[in-house]
Image (cartoon, helix red, strand yellow):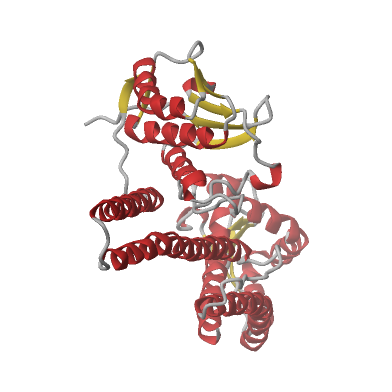
Length: 432
């Protein structure tokens, strides 16, 4: 802190010194007319006395009068011819002709016209006030130092608090935050640090939950595979062996599906998935998506109602990712619907695409609606992966909406079930 203070103090003192020099050197020149007028008013009586003194001395005694002035005055006087006075402007020569006092730009020479047409030149040397000036400048330097000390100390105190928070956060205390008052000069930096720490803590917590979920989800099929392989090693009839092999194949497919879902979610969360934007005919695209899931819905003896009356003709998006999101929403609705699943495609604000999937199932309580998009979350502990899936489908839907710059909302449907609404804003295809 001391090094920073010295640097700042040196810059302030240097700037103040340059400002003082600039004022002394330039103000007489910049405000010459104003200062000349002031000097005329201030020296009016003095000029009158000089003129009267020299006039009474007469031409014969003027040299002796000037000698007495030079002996008793700080200023030095001499008589000059007005036509030979150097460095006078046209205005100044005009003022001399009007018997006005003339102040030169150096602030030391002035010319006083006398009644007989001659001009009295006076030169005022600087008084030696070096000691007083040193004291004055020292007081100015000290006065500049005191607020700098206060300012730097407050800065240093807040930066130390921010440093301690960063050290604690780096040591693994992820809940550490910088507590600074809003009036602090580094409050904005502390707020950015706290926001960063909040995001990092959330990301690490999310990764931990993901790892716990992955471990839990992989444990069951792996255990079944180990158990099935152990059973195959024992002598069993061929028909029973075939059934056990089919069960093993089912477990392998389940593992493959889980890994594929995990990879898809990981790519979406890391931003590794690049959008392949296309101008899609919404009606044809929706027909293909609904057709791919129609048999699964029919097998559950459910009705799939699709409404496209208010749908846009075309929309720019990544049709593959949006199709996956819509399929996940329909399959999620199929798990809990009693009779009907309703899909609506509408035009949203400013050309956005609004996809809505409703079911007439039991619905989701309001306090739990914000959590359903978390990976591996099953609100009902009695649901296993056969009734509740892996718990990744809605998390993937949310990420797909976010990578399109949109959002996904969960509300209660009119019949009491769940209503998922995915809003995808209008996009344009970037030039190649």
